[in-house]
Image (cartoon, rainbow, N blue to C red; front, side, top):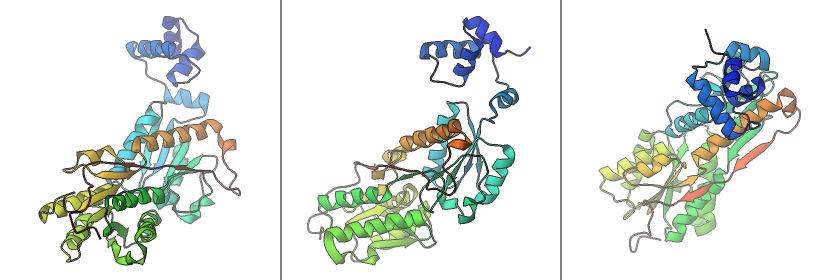
Length: 342
């Protein structure tokens, strides 16, 4: 015979509603009481009746995610953390790497409670074809969206990295990570690099200081860095546009026996713990990935609680929350070798 909420309530000596709230991790239940109820539920082998909960709450307990790529390390780390945050509140995630409009149609059939849409996958037409009645949150401001959006200040992050290198004495720098296909989020970072460098050293910062790559993967960074590091006018500092590109840059430097940071300094975009575990721990800029995951999860849950009536009207302007970046200093940056700063 299956264990019910009523059984848990009788053993815990609390009301049915208190047990229900505790199992949903409601802040209305004191932590001590909540811990007691959860321990009893676990001891009794309680399994929630998803179908019954859905009938009562009108919610599925599932959040759909329109995912841009299964290949990039930072995105994989981010969805893992988002999923863990949502699990704390009893939610599961359903991922789709299909076209955004197709993914949303699938999520509508599954009757998900909310959708997280990564804007690099957002086709303009989905703004009018959104799943009616389902809250949608965009991550990344690559397209003008009528949905609430959470983003990070990429330009400021890049400027922090460039200014750090400049203050160390570097005047010859290059950015690796402008894809040769349209990618507004990556273009924003590449443009910010050139703008900040020009503000510091003037027109000596030419377009050639931004290196185009075929993509944002390890091999793209490796090929771009290997060519650049073998040039006669090799820069004294590099800026990697992503964690995966940075891994490729490090491999190219190692193969060419170029020491980091003694001969070339390196800064990277992506504030993730993996930066600390590379063969040379890399100085990084960005928003801490745990903070990003927690903020995204909290915003999704708030939108679900607000319900369809709490969403911005499609004709209005949607809220955009921008997270502020930081510079994390590690072993990959140092003043340029004597005579190579300018």
